[in-house]
Length: 402
Image (cartoon, rainbow, N blue to C red; front, side, top):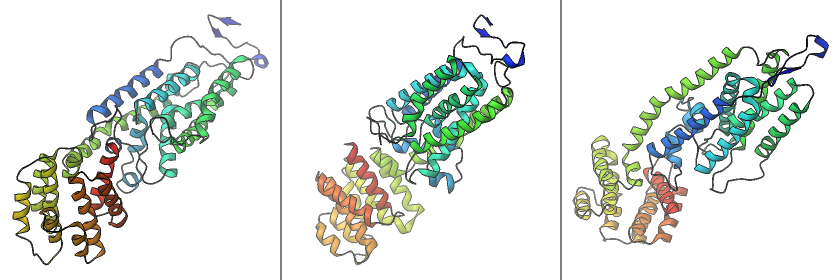
């Protein structure tokens, strides 16, 4: 029998049917969509690199909490498993996830209640982040709520077995399969806006959501509208939210440190500020002083500072002319050519440095193709701990953006 859309279980046990109510709106779903949208606006506003086409840079996604294996395993930043699920790489990425979340909310939230729905999303989001961490390449920055969303659709299929017959379980399964199957089959490597699809996160989310749903079925008596233990589910969701909110503190420190880095300032086009900070770094590391002066010269030149050559000449006069990197100073002062500088490099390390600074020499002259070739060679030949390695990678990113 039915009463205002609420199917009521019969008194006879053998004929008992599940109760459900599909009236009302999936309020938590709408709230989560609003939160994800607000977070994306924050990505654009608080990014460490200016966004391009309203899309945050990879550096921004890393600083603001994307999954990255080295930061999680070596630096203990486990909170990234939570924050990564709240970030998105583009408006298209956000829009697709919000649409899928809306579909999932319509199918599931009103059936199991918003507390269990929230818990399933949180657990699936964590599973998606873990899947990304374990299966994606080490250099990938993972972001997106898709792990949590795919977990919801896996949950829809599992919870549909609570309803043994009738049109409802068929409706649930068809609706879930339409989203779930394409999300797990790696048929497309990237989206139209160039974002790589994280199938590892999808798989991790689906496994997590499906596993928790099996537990949920056991906690869902046939004569109850929603599963039991909804307060325990709420506590789990609150813990997820607490970690996300608490991560604002370390993220703020990371962002401040990044913005104070003269190399970051340099690649953001803040050349005057970068030049001043490169000069300040000299007092902190005397051994690297000749290189910081070179970087100051590059920043001054890019910033059209008329003192650039004069300051470099003053610092060149303080160096031992028989030692490296004096030939690099001669290159920028017009006393040596690129081939002559490379010939004076006597070790593999000095050769990789020569290659990088020759690339900068070409770039200052607008010779983009030659500069790009040298930067690629520097990335290949320089140790990853060298500032020239990071510099070459940064310049290649800038050239790609142009």
